Every structure is written in structure tokens, then in C-alpha cells.
Length: 443
Image (cartoon, rainbow, N blue to C red; front, top):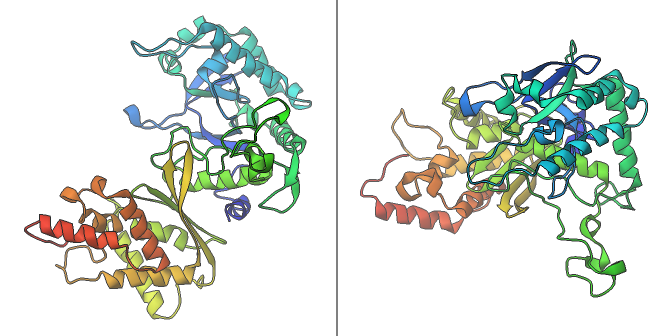
């Protein structure tokens, strides 16, 4: 379903997902150079104030999976790789190894040098290599952004007078896409579980980011512990090497489908996503087989009340009630397949808390049924339809959201969306809260 969603978004002119071999990445600083590789300026792309500054996202070649070893991205990376500037550390922290920093910088240059023709002869690539061979740290130290560069931010390159990054120049972009295809085809072949076709199988899947509580660097849904140990795979087979298949070959998915499903999921989980809902420890995302208002309506209905539009949730629920009472969901999308995925953190991996395939019409009926079930007489100025978080917080200690038991939040949301009975733990939490409070009020 995520693979299909990626294909659907490829045709979206306003919000298209990146092509194979690329990703959207926040790049705080852009190194602007002329055709001879001379530094023109370093542009700060961030907006906002203080610690809330946010960098502008750019389409760049897909990053490598960082480990303890040296692995460089193509035409973008952090300041240690790009400029050989050791990161500034706090007192008591171990200082970066100067030799390793230089090795990282050399790896960054070598990655660019390895680009095939015609990209290697592109004026942008020639300018970047000229800059990397001739720049001096003393020149950078005179710039106002020097202290920011010591924080090891991500950087990329742009030719003076152009709006796109050098990695987005047509010849360079085409070469990167071809290179990604070539690498994918060179992998060991197998039958892809998504497409059913014989493809080069991905050994390691890109990390999924944005799941609350998981590692900030990302975690995996599909992940097998290690390679088969022993010379020539001799000796006993580890339990995680089913049928002597190691890593990604335990659940074979082609390189392109892997890129598609991980890119789609990271898009749904991104910061500020209108299709993402956080309830307890469950990060839940919603999408459909074709564009429908329900993809975002369900988040408006169950999410936190927006300060700039507190009546938004009430309007959405009211519209939903009217559409159901008229016998169909507004917009004629009742038969459109709808997908709900709930994810929870589990160390370096991600646990699938729940997965539901329904239709827009069935989901609308379940949501309306939930609000009818909890309807109660209240004062006119109080919320007509209780937001889920406010409802659950009223059962928690001190009425605070942070005290909502993680399983209770996820189980309640799942029960609502599936049209099932509320979890027994919701009754237990409600009774306990009533016993602890002398006065029971409408939330």
C-alpha cells in the first residue's frame, strides 16, 4: 500500500515525492561558488528565531546509511566531510580525530570524482572539485557563519546566479538517477515480495524517521540482525538467518520498491504532516488509494485543537454527521480504500502497533458512532465533540496528557477506527479517576 501511495504521489504536481535515488533534506547552509570554484558566499537557508530556526529542504542524492565507518554522501554532507572542519565539542567531550576528519573529507571528494561522464564534465561538478582542492579554512574563518559551521551542519553547493543546487543540474541529476539504477540492478537477484518481479534485492532498508520515541537517526520496520557468521557460511546457521538467507534476503524486496515504501512512509511521518496523528506512543498515519479529504480530516477530528482555529474539529465532525445521515460520505468517496498504520518505537526497530484496511465510508460510520456513543449533556460553551486527547487526559493522573498510559491511547484509537468495543482498560482508568476526584466535570 505504501508502494502504491508513492506511485500515486509521483503524479502530484504540488507535492511530488522525490525520484529514485534522491531525498528531501534540510540543508542549513549552501556554499555558493563561481564557475572557477571561487567562494562567493555561504547562504544561511534557515528561518525562525533562536533554537527554533528551521532549514529549507532541498532535493539531494539519497544519503548513505551512516555507521561507525567512513561513508560519504554525494554532493552534500556535514561540515566535517565537506570542509574538513572538526566539529566543536562541549567541555569534557572527546575531540574529533583530525586524521579521521581528513579521511572523511577525502572520501567526500572521491565520491564526486567517481561520477561518470557526462556528469564528470559538467561545469558545476568541475567547479565543486576546483573549490575543494583550493579553499582554505582561513578564508572560511573570516565569514560570519564560521561559528555555525563548527556545529557540523549539512552543506551543499550551488553555482552563483543559479537557483538550483549543483546536484539538480539536469546532466548531474540524470547521471545520479542512472547510477542508482545501475547499482540496483547489480545487486543479487530475487523475487520481490511487493512487485512479484525478479529484481536486485535490497540488503539494508533506509531508516524510517519521525516515529515518536524511536532513535532520532531513524529505525527500521524491515531489519534482520546480522550476516551469517563463519568462513564461507560454514558452521551452525544463526536463528535469524532463516534458510541460510542473511539480512534483507529474509524478506526480499527490490531496491526501487524499498526506496518507494520508505520514502512514502517518511513523507507521511514528516514534521507537520497533515496525515499524521500522535496518540500516546502510537504514531499513526492515514492515506487512501486516491486523493480524498478523509486523509487529513481524520487528523483534524482526533488531533489537538488548533489555537488559530479551535472550531475546526467541531466543523469536521458536524459535516461528517450530516453526510452519514444523508446516507453517504460527502464527496462520493465512500468506496475508496483507506489505510491506517500505527507505529510504536522498539529500540532500533519499529513495531507495527496496528494495521487496518477499510473504506472511507466505513471509517466515517465508525467515527460518527464513536461520537454518538460518548455524547453527553454539557454547557453550551464547552466543546461539542471531545477531542481524543482531551477525553483520554481526563482519565489520567492530574488530567495531564503525559500521564496517559501508552497502550490505552493506542488501543482506544484502534477501537474507534475499527468500530470495536472500547478497551476494558478505558473503563478501569475512568473509574479510578472518578474515585480520585471529588468533583467530576466535563473536560
